[in-house]
Picture 1 (cartoon, rainbow, N blue to C red):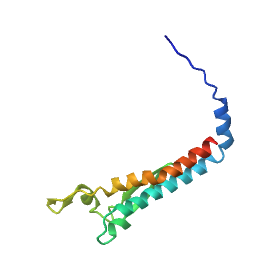
Picture 2: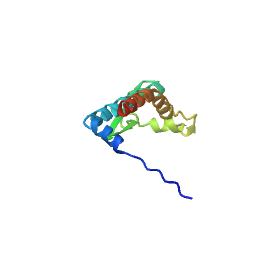
Picture 3: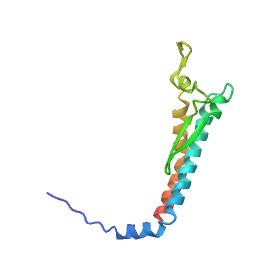
Picture 4: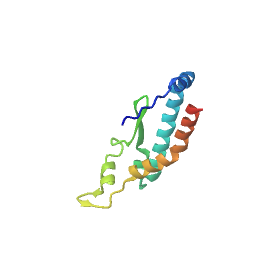
Length: 122
């Protein structure tokens, strides 16, 4: 048995074409806003002894719609050891501040993503 559905995409195409001038700039704004939220939540989760690790968190433009949030190893070369739980020759509890920050960033940025989708589908 074969089930076939015919879907008229002309309404969707018309709708998207009516917004095509605004989509790139709105999407760029969304990416910038969300990446800043992620950076800020990672900074809040990073341990603070001297503040150097917190101030090393950067946002890098990978391409127009992709950002990378990371600790600058030039400024804080020990960041990987904090994340993996290595202190000197011993092991300590890993501190996944990047993971916790990313999870909080995802939660905090959901409203911005939802707003963009509402605009796009309105």
